[in-house]
Image (cartoon, rainbow, N blue to C red; front, side, top):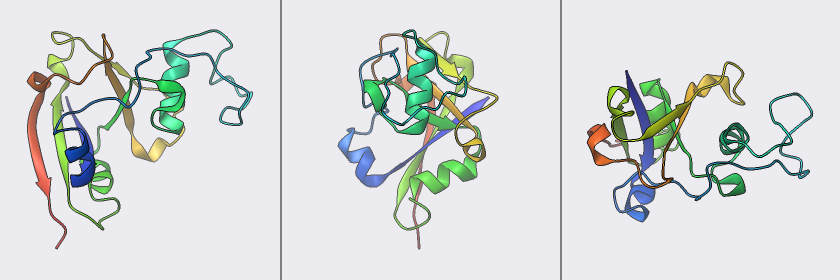
Length: 143
């Protein structure tokens, strides 16, 4: 399966052309700060699931080391171009290589934003996504 990560030219330049998480932590405890409701999507204990769900609400929330991807190319294009207003890139990632290179995937049946078809990823060591799993980096230019 191929996953897609859409980023703007600006974001790509800031990350030196790499897919890097904004945070450093694989797990978190939830806080009473208004981001989570008492609906069963989070737990009181520290967990990866809490960190993933926090990331899906707001990238880097609680210093999580996660990266958003999607299984839908058109969704990635929207993120790469910030709704067709700027130029960007779409990274194509081969999930068949994830285990070999230490990349973990998280997907939920009840995500915060179902239309995004998000599959959240991270490396075992919370570092950048290995270049070996990126099979293509496609430029998207808005005319």
